Length: 254
Ligand code: PEP
Image 1: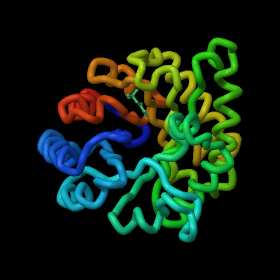
Image 2: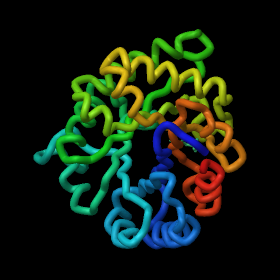
Image 3: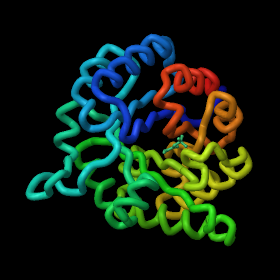
Image 4: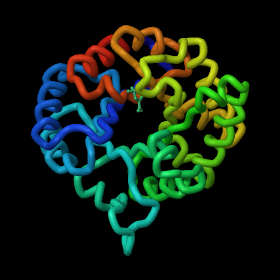
């Protein structure tokens, strides 16, 4: 597939996989995807498996991501993990503002923006998630919600930092539900986000930023979604827990 930007496909394992299960999964992924050079491939295990997974993928084309981090660099923040700690395991990417964290941990755009800045300060690339709920879409507010989240979660980034940031458009109604946005809905939202980035930063930045789609991506719908001009990859939840489905999504996207 001829794309304007290199595709990036990331697997968000969420709160799944023991260390042993994680190692089994990456062993299979390494084997399945050994020849893939056209796509940036990222696995995001839970914190508890980062160390072992990091060692297991050293000699591969898989890169390591985390699912969250603190906006602080150190200190009395019980239960938190900072960017510097992630760097110890050669983590390169960090998912920020996932809708589950927005929903269950009440994370707001301003906090996500602080985390994104902290990530860049430690040379981690943030994957910043945005997306509307079903009610918001049905009320015709999807673009308004996206604009608020994009402006708020990326506030304060420099142009250089923005170019190294990945935006993940994840309509909340499509996450883990089996309902995927149509290719038209996905392209429309991605195009909207890119135009917004041009207004917030500039055209060059907007052309370089990769915007992933997330929400019930499967081997069967990956090709059509990835063929949209402003869709530059996928953030996978459920499908990333199975080596075959992750690998098939990658292969169907090339
Ligand atoms: C996600 O949680 O980021 C996600 C896209 O999940 P799923 O692929 O399971 O819908």
